[in-house]
Image 1 (cartoon, rainbow, N blue to C red):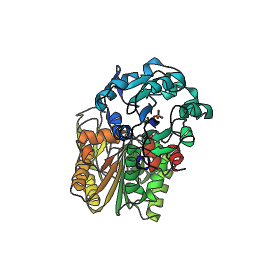
Image 2 (cartoon, rainbow, N blue to C red; image 1 turned 60 degrees about the vertical axis):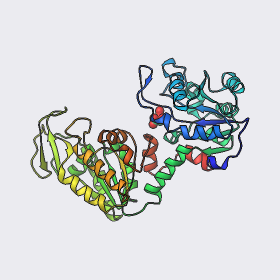
Image 3 (cartoon, rainbow, N blue to C red; image 1 turned 90 degrees about the horizontal axis):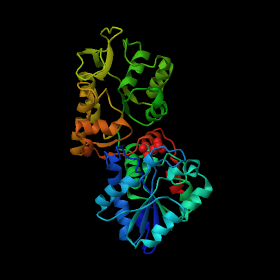
Image 4 (cartoon, rainbow, N blue to C red; image 1 turned 120 degrees about the horizontal axis):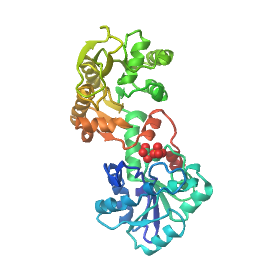
Length: 395
Ligand code: 3PG
């Protein structure tokens, strides 16, 4: 059910789970993307006459009241974005929340204090879920990025009130469906990042679904090592050699072409502008040499496959993009993906961890078809897992 299925809400309270787990420095938000993506849902509910009560978590206070983890500093920036004063309740359940909501007129918005100040939230305690449900008449989940948590505010409460997917949740699910559920083929995945061990489930799921998969970042070293390539002193999980070989065999059996670096950028110091050289992967490396990026031949090969692909799903950078010049492969591939997307040849969906930062660094995040605001939830979805928050809405 989406918000299009809801008619008049005058006099009703919509309990809306958002993800305001935003980066914060000295009490100030440094990136308000997660606030901005919640606006369409809030506005739609206000236009239907609802009072909007926002439920969110911030950080990991572990069931205790931790003043530095209060959501209070978010009420101001949210008021500015909405152009109205957003009320703040010092608790998400009980009289603090219900009394404030009683006072507020139709069309107003209240932000309720961090749900994780209650131990019942992460335990998905039925009593706490009921206390949340007592605040509202309907429940809307607009927090895809928290949907991998089976918590009271993401899962339990959805079973107690008429439940709907918010606008951002719907956009996320539509984009992910277009990328991996029912994509236009051929499909290409790019998976980067440092360690294979953190992305095993993801790689196993993707090789069964995609036509091609490019593996980059530190994790590519483990695959190269498994194939007998000397990776010098590079980051490499040597104990995962067999696992890497199994993934390669499975990919071959399932018709998924694996693209690994054919050339690399090597340096000895882990710092920006460290002296570096580019070489083919069969050229010798010393024990001090470390691979920090994919080389231009690798990018050319990847872009050639991308040019033939209709759908791209991207998680993780191809090199140490935070330290130039080791951002070159990530930036070049991102720019090519953006150009293909802009000319209508590619549906490109990206998300998870560093990916958004890498695309922003390349200056092309806005040119992708969709960039997810989710970290862990995006990864779990790519792993093929059922997200409890989404499953509760579906039921
Ligand atoms: C996120 O920032 O990815 C979500 O808000 C989930 O946060 P969590 O990992 O603390 O559950």
